Length: 182
Image (cartoon, rainbow, N blue to C red; front, side, top):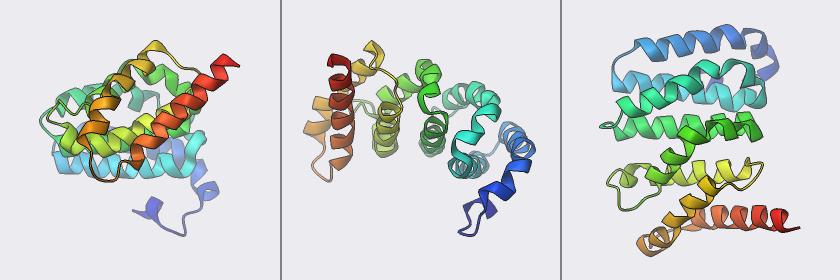
């Protein structure tokens, strides 16, 4: 996609952001094929990644739609991976405002990082990255955020390969905890 191009210039794109994002969102709602939804989500993710915090005024519709799409995609783990990637960029773009997504976001992270759930095979890596960016952008530790750490011991026991992804959420957690105590 042109948005994913090396030569992409964000400042030239910004005047068209609202209309393009709106059209992409409409397309996401209208298409029925799983692969097409994944492609549209990829473009949306690229747009969010490129414009970062400047996406904030335009994501309300997407934020409301993603929980429905997540529920509808229960049997389509690859689509759920695309949703996770979109959420990663969305949390980064929203920063501390992403706490408003916690009612949807935290159960998604919980499911994606729970090795007792069959979908974890597909969702774990993206789920860990989403967990990390959620912690990095969290204004404070909440009981709901702490609850996700219940998955950590099973994750450490299950993973034998590169588990460096786990180190970052742990370090973020201790950093946030340290800030609370001082």
